[in-house]
Length: 141
Image (cartoon, rainbow, N blue to C red):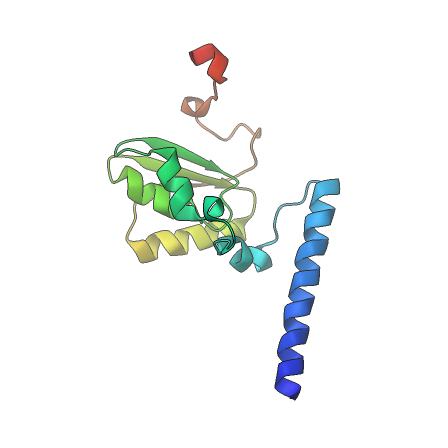
């Protein structure tokens, strides 16, 4: 009985912290803390559209493409994107938190991927190469 209470308390505290963080991050710009990276990595079991495999398939990635994963977090999309573009392509994983980028490196190494470039920065800091200049669709069409 006590074990069940401890487990319920841990789950409750985790949910409360997650909800509080979501509310605060809507009011001020707060990146997801590294210690919550496990929750970011999980696919939502209630919606198919939020699952990494579905997102990657909708991106229609081809071998040789170059991909920027801005705000990559723990690499939930970076690693499958790197697999999709193959060795001819490259994924640039950009995040402002070294802990998240370390997780991306771990996952890439475990998957045997060498085509992920890590950049510790926020968007707008000027650390991206010029090839990542984003042109609005209405200028391309």
